[in-house]
Image 1 (cartoon, one colour):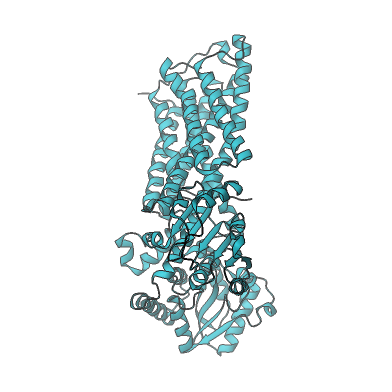
Image 2: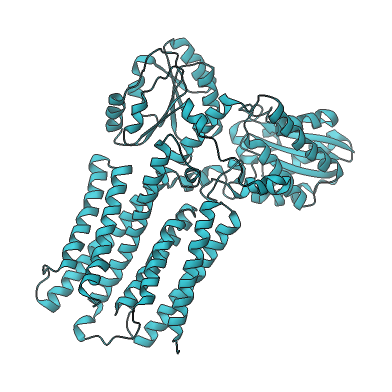
Length: 273
Length: 364
């Protein structure tokens, strides 16, 4: 079996993420400084390999690596890890890793399961407008993945704190306020990206299809998820929505995002766009 | 050769001075090195917690001279003028010093009597000093003995009994809601002994702003003065809840003083900032249904006592003293480490209290 260097690096990265996930989970079950340090180190190594893999692929393809479902899922995994690592650095909390990194592993394994041959792209599927659209959308989605995980952790922690029979996990999860903060910051990071992605996407559609908005399922789902996040931000500013309601909305929003990104494709067969 | 203790604590020194002399754990080896410059000091170890900074040492020369050079050395290291230390340091020698170490390890010297964290802090300070080979036969024997004594004190006296754990569990819960408690506001209802104990715990954890409400206003004033807080009238306590993050209720009122509807209204007026209600009164003051309100988490003393801390982890970690002290550090709940802690502040490595507190709570 011949494997190009970028594929080899991709598998290496995936293995790093998987190992990282296992260590992060281990750190939740029994907190240990060394395990946590290993988790970060392995994830970082995976991330570095993944970045290198992209560089090699860009060199080979002479275009950004978003041309096929495999490439975009792989980029999604990379973006999730990037966002997570930024948060780990910022909050010095490694418990979140046990919730976020599995998503990266899932996205990465999904990518690994897809055909990896280099697709020939027609002229309409190229151009800076489309590349920036995909990159922005995927980075935004990764930020929303973070929001979603923070939301899940928030609900879990709140349930534990309010229950009369709390479990051990409470003592491991980060404080509620921190989770709320993570959720807000990641929405504030992801929302502008999603907005820009929608704008650049419709500009591209206008250019190629002659209409900036056609009622394709993916566009509808994207608009719906944009509306959810807009509502989330608005409700927070105007009515002070935080905590439980915000967490539920964030999880819902991410489901929509995922559906727009993957679900629609899965139903219609794997094609780009 | 004479054993001595040189230190300052929450009674003798201001928080500013304590903060400036505080060594985070990872700077301890360096600090021990610096103390090594004092030639008369045969053995040395440093214990720093949020409430105390102490040097345990064995002097080879005359005691007063050694102590002076240690103080001067600390001052140089932290670039502090020795005049600032005036009266802040206490010293104990020989038997009195040993007695002091035993008392500290058993938490008899703590701000909150019987608090369990101090033993872990002493243990980790000792293991660092040992790793630096700055202890010798005298300190090694003394500390081993101190751990033994502390254990006996815990098991054979009632020092670690219920009231302490209720208050400390309440603090732990609060930390799981707000993260760092520095800068948070506490409202205390009632000015009795329980209220005072809970208040001590919270102060110990960095809460700075304190409001006291009591039916007898004079007692509220007295308690508020003791903790540099502010007394408010009992009738206005629901109004004050708009500004408080943590409400501790310990009145002797025979009926509920806070109902679900009240809390709902308050939460709305607080623009959904979370509030933590702790009811340590008997009979209870706060309606249990308050817990159902979003953003309000209420707990009672019975819940608290069910909230047994997951004390130290597995049996294997507990078996040997050394691994236990290291488990005290590694399983730390400080957001930087992720887990559970006995050592709280001493494990905040690096940037000092306030900066690390800000970083972890996510505020700029």
